[in-house]
Length: 273
Image 1 (cartoon, helix red, strand yellow):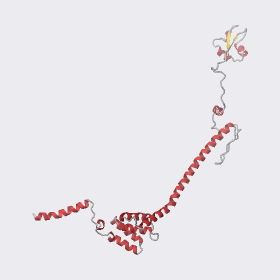
Image 2 (tube, one colour; image 1 turned 135 degrees about the vertical axis):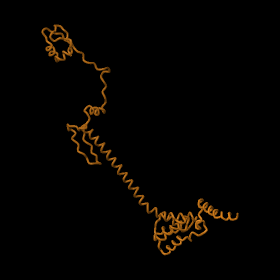
Image 3 (cartoon, helix red, strand yellow; image 1 turned 180 degrees about the horizontal axis):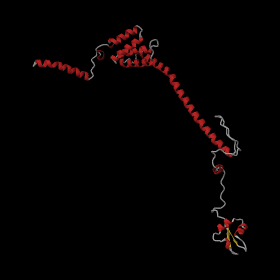
C-alpha cells in the first residue's frame, strides 16, 4: 500500500506543474518579486556598457532585459535616459515612451529628474514635427487655393464666351476678360454669324423677351378673307376671267371645281379666290 502511494507522488507533482503552466503562473524570480530585476544578466550587461560609454550596446541589452521581463521599470528608465540625452542617442519619441512607462511602473509621478525629462522630450517632439506638420498644412491650403482659382477662371471664361456671343448677335462690342488672354472676335457688323448661332426665329425671340408684348387688336380668332364672285360676260373664257381678276387659271379652276371651261354660260357665277 505504501509503495502505491509513493509511486503516485511523481504523477501528482507533474500534475501540479501542468496546472501552474496552464493557469499562467510565472515562477521566474524577477517577475514574482523574489529577486531584484537589476540582478538579471542582460540588465547588468547593459549597465556595464553604459558605464563604458557604449550606448548602442547598452540600448541593445536594456531591450533584451525588457524582452525577458517587460515589467523591469529600471530597464525602461535606462532606455529613457539614453534617448533623452542629446549627447548619447537622442530619440525623443522613445525617451517619452520609456520614461512614462518607468513612472507608471515605479509610481514615480513626483520624480524630480524623470518628470522634467518627460516634459522636455515632449517639447522636443513638438519642435521637431511642428514645422513638418505646418508645411503639410500650408501645402494643402496652397493646392486647394490653386484648384479654386482654376475653377473660378474657367467659370469666368465660359461666361465671357457666352456674353460675347450674345453681344455679337446684338451688334455690341465684345467684353474683355482681364484674367485670361483676350480672344479675337469678328466685328459686330460682320454679316456671317458663327456656325453654332441659333436659328433666326430663336434669336428674334431672345431679343424680344426684354420688350413689352403688344396686346392683340381683337379678342376673337382671325377670320379668313371672304371670296368674291364674278358673272361671266359674253364671249369670255376662263383665262380671260382669271387675267381680269389677277389670279391664275389653276387657282380659278380650283375655286370652281364643277365648272367646265369649255361650257361657260353668260351670267354664270364664278368664285374668285
